[in-house]
Amino acid sequence: MLFRDDDLTHLESHGIPPLPEPAEQGFVETQGVRIWYASHGSGPAVILLHGGMGNSGNWGYQVPAIIDAGYRAVVIDSRGHGRSTRDARDYSYQLMAADTRAVMDRLQIHKAAIIGWSDGADTGLILAQETPERVAGLFFFACNVDSSGTRPFEFTPVIGRIWQQHQNDYATLSATPEDFDALSQAIEIMQEEQPNLSAAELAAISVPVTVVLGEHDEFIRPEHMAYLAATLPDATHQVLPGLSHFAPLQAPHLFNDAVLTFLRRVLA
Image 1 (spheres, rainbow, N blue to C red):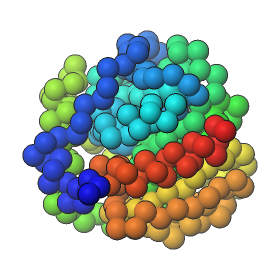
Image 2: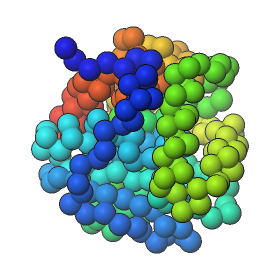
Image 3: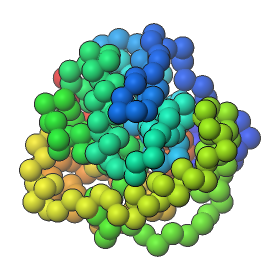
């Protein structure tokens, strides 16, 4: 029987499987911060960008599947998240896109497929907007591109379980373990104001994009994702039945199948 953890009770009691031993890991010093990265496997490059308040370890079910399919999986802790540091500047997706390019430069990756989850999806979209020559394609999972795309927030037990996981990970990984609440406030400010991409700006993004949402996403309106897929010039749209914002952890086999289908399309 295939693994399912729809209510994240398995995560609550067992955590997320650890990432495999990397071929290379370290920090990139860029714009006054230290960005942690790790590279796994070999082949065409795939960069995985986690969501807000998370870290690279959230991809514990995805990295082995991507490696086994013959790709090089690169994970990055976003600035201020996980092992990475942050400075006093306000957060922006442009800043995190620049951090991603700095890691690509360090690893001598000219072009990569991007797998983005929530805030990581918007970081990937800005990366594709600013430097399309660096992006083979974007798997855009569960994020808005303007303020109309979000649902009113309602706390659920599932959100509580992932939030506790994020807190535990931050306390373990961060060089400033007491700053979780401050980071949360800074990310919330960014999310209230960004992104704010117009239809014209979306229509000018030329890279292939697969727009994906869980059927029961807690944060993002499904009609907003349909709008995004219809407005981007080279986009496909997929809904993951029965899953939510946390699909990579709830049903890894379904999420990974979607990711690998995307990778075969853009890294053929």
